[in-house]
Image: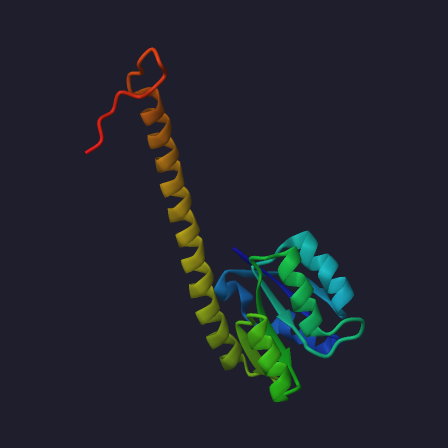
Length: 165
């Protein structure tokens, strides 16, 4: 099951999102919510979620600053911004930070569903790549270990008796 945290200073928006969106249909569990970036960073560090929904304009630190710091504390977390601000500079900085999607309020569930569909495919693909690389690494380690036991003969001078072409 995927884990998500939601950061937004608007209590009713957070509650509506948590209670009315069909998270279970996406195999997602809302693991926490915060009304500001500082509390959000603690939540992020503790939970290490797959996804964080972040508002840009929050008390304490901005959503963009939260993402900047969050990427260091939870490198695998993916970020979706949900904001009432459509300024180009915010969107530009979000892209530079690697934000997956920038959704505008009022939020339409169809937009959220489309963003989640694409994001979950990305997460699954990255997980499969990591599993494949780990498997290759294990195979390589096994090969290296078995090759090391069949060491070439050595002369009394310590040089390897291998001819190179």
